[in-house]
Image 1: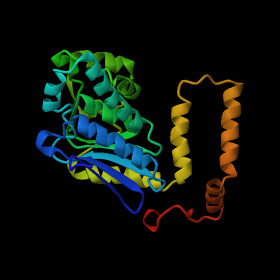
Image 2: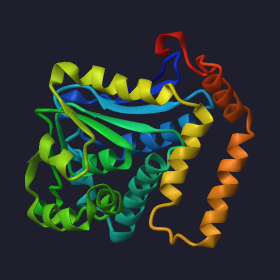
Image 3: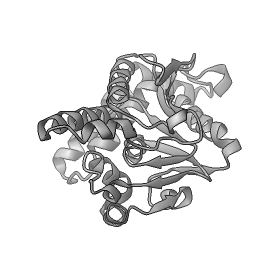
Image 4: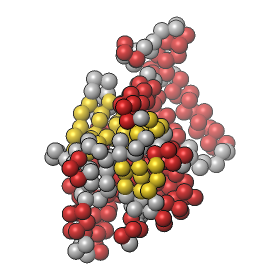
Length: 265
C-alpha cells in the first residue's frame, strides 16, 4: 500500500480507511482505486473487523477524479476506458457489499465519484460545511458507474435532478435526500462517528453482520408464504445460536453480554 491510503484497526475492531492525498483534495486515480479494492478485500476477510469507517485527511473528503488521471484517460481507447471503469465498479461493489457496517466520515467537499463512495456506505456523518456535487455532466460525462449506488441512497427522483443539473448541494440537503445520516459542527465530527461506532459494537457481532445482509436481501421483496418461511427459519436459527443464547441470557440475567467491552457498558 502506498501513502495515498492509510488503514488501521483498533482494539474494538474498528477499521479506519483514510484517503491521504490532502494536497489534491483526495482526488483518486487508478492506483488509489486499486488500493481501495484490495483493502476492502483484505478487511472483509478479517473476522476481527466489526465496523469500517471511510475517512480522509485535509479540507476535502474527495474531489473525485484526479486531473492527471483524467488527462491519461482522454487518450484511452474505448476498451481501455471500459477496463478502467470496470475497476472502479468492482471497488464500489466491494464497499457496498462489505460484510460489516460502514460509515463515511465527510468533513468537506465530496464531488463526482466521491458521492459514490458515500452512497456505498451504510451511513454517513457530514460536517455543516460539507458539500456534494454530481459534477460529471459539467464536462460532458456521466455518473454511470456510481449511479446504482447513488440512486439506492437518494432515490430516482432526486437523482434525476442532481445527475442533470450538477448543482452543488449542502450537507443539510444531503441529509434531507438520504445521502447523509447526520450533520454536525466540524468540532463534533469524531464524536458523532464514535457514537455510531459504539451503537454498533454494543450489539452482537454476528447478529450485526447478519442484520446488514437482511436489510439488503429483503429490499423490494414480495411478502408471501415463501418469504415468511425464510424469515421464520432465520430467526429460529439465530435464537439457538451461541450468540443468540448469550444475548438472551444476558438480557434475562440483567448483565452485559460477553461481546461488550467495559468502555461500552
